[in-house]
Length: 263
Image 1: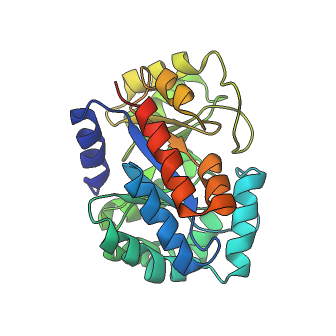
Image 2: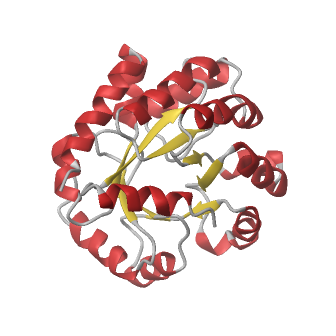
C-alpha cells in the first residue's frame, strides 16, 4: 500500500478538518488545461485529488461527468496520456497531494493490469477507484496493485447488505468510498436520512478512513457528514464549475467545502 493516502487524512485530522477528496476529469477541456484545474483544486484545499479517466460507456456517471468524459475523449484523452502527461505535471506542482485514478475496469484491462500498476506508481499515483469492479472479482487486480504500492479503493453502495459492507471495510485499502445515494453521480439538494447510520456502520468496521461521495455539493452537506465520516468526495459540482467558469471557480468551490469540513 502507498501510505500517501493515510498521511493526507492524518494531516487533515491534525488541522481539525475532515478531508476533501476532489474530482475532476483529465482532458477536460484538454489535457494541458485540465492540469490547471487539478492544481486549482489543491490550491482550494483538496487533500486528495481524484483524476478521472474518460471512458466511452460509463455506468456510474451522471450527465455532468459523462459530458466531461465525452469532451475529454474528443480532446484525445487516453489512460496512457493521462499517466504520461497529466499525472506527472500535477505531481510536480502538488508534490504532497495523493492522486487517485477514477475509471472503469475495461480501461485498465486494455492497458494491462501489471503495466498500469507499474506505470501509475512510477508517475505518482497513490490509488485507484473502479466503480464497476465487485470485491469478489478484485483479487488478482488488488494483488497486482498491492505489489506496486497502489491502493485499490473499495466502494460501499446504499444497497450493500450490512455483513457485506463490514467485510469490504475490514479488508479495505486507502479509504472506503461510501456511495451516498443509489443511482449515478450528480448534485442532490438532499441526502438520504439513513446515510449517517450507514457511515457509522462502515466506519466502525474499517481500519482505514471512510468518505461519503455522490451527491455532495455544498459546505452544509459536508458539515453534516463530517461527524460521521473522515471526509467527503465532491465531483459533479466541481466539474460543472470548472467547465462553466474555469479553474478559479473550482478552486473557490473547494475552499467553500473545506470551510464546511472544519471541526
